Image (tube, rainbow, N blue to C red):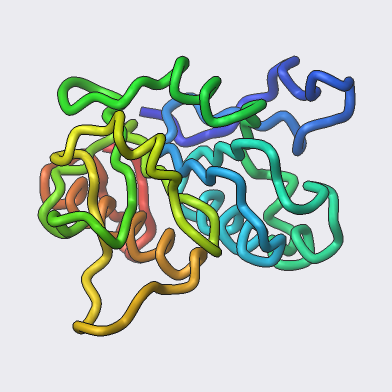
Length: 198
């Protein structure tokens, strides 16, 4: 498996404006999906996490900010040009392209504080999608109603606490998944502890 990014011509939005640097990973470890994110700093930090872990970032519109906003790029630092970024017009379009399913490659895992299953108990594997809702209210019930309960997961917290910061939650879930993949041999670490392909 190669972790090297490749350039593609798929670098513009529907309105003709550029998307990221057009980097596409040949085999993204995971797909991190942000549905209608609201805070540019969180999206920038999440973009940085995606670059450093070999994941593709999906942004589902409408966004509450301009993707070129300085705060977003500042949080992503110099990692942003190396981000594998895909944008979706709306949640319905994303769900049509990636319907929730529990079997096979590219399964979708939806993060919700109402889930009965922890991310630590979910067999997240190479190529799966981790789907996160907006910072203020999470994933809409109309979306979650279409997702099997077995594909709804949460990050463990002590009783009485409501939520984590979105970028923290994404990092916890991505690294929990990478830990699973490391245990199953889907991910290897080099002599310096860096993530390399299987």
